[in-house]
Image 1 (cartoon, rainbow, N blue to C red):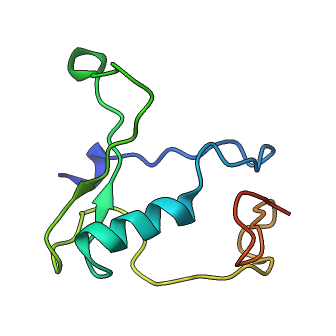
Image 2: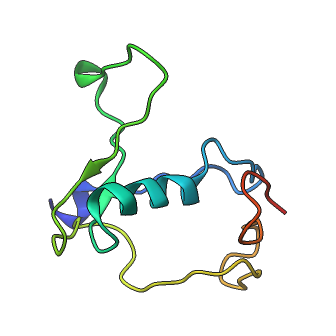
Length: 99
């Protein structure tokens, strides 16, 4: 995929509530595909949409394969990060609650 053909979508920074808990889905991915496998949720074109129930799909690659989008470095913290001044993260070990 060409770099100019892809865009990343974020929720507005003013609303830090979780739609679904990212850490929970990360753990599901780790349990199913392994810690070094990458996975993604796909928000398809309307012509490919399947919406028959309220469920999430994680599409998993084989360990070692990388999705040609995303960040290149690990950055994990529950402390404020000056690079992302409006971001809020709940403390580790406190499921479902943000700061």
